[in-house]
Length: 101
Image 1 (cartoon, rainbow, N blue to C red):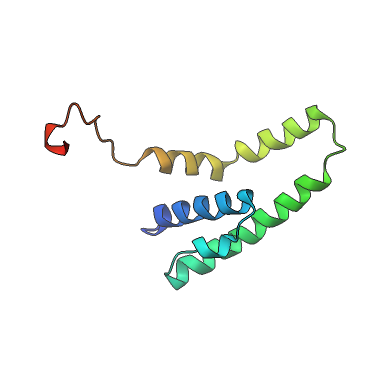
Image 2 (image 1 turned 60 degrees about the horizontal axis):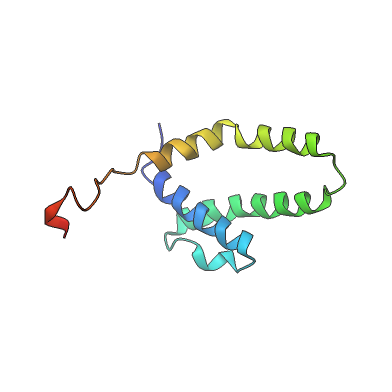
């Protein structure tokens, strides 16, 4: 069973990864909760290592890069992240919700 902090951890991890990819200091996006902060920081160490590895694999053939990416993106953790994202509450468009206007 997922912990109650799991959605918060996923959101914080996404924000940190976005900052890492943008070349910014991802440490600024860490959550204030010490437990979550520690978990996300340890995951970001792995993300940094993967980014360094990706920079070293420029000589790989395209087919091999695609195979590696497919393995990473279809991992169990990747699927859980996508499911957690889509579990966000659905809000209909504003034109259907007059109280929101």
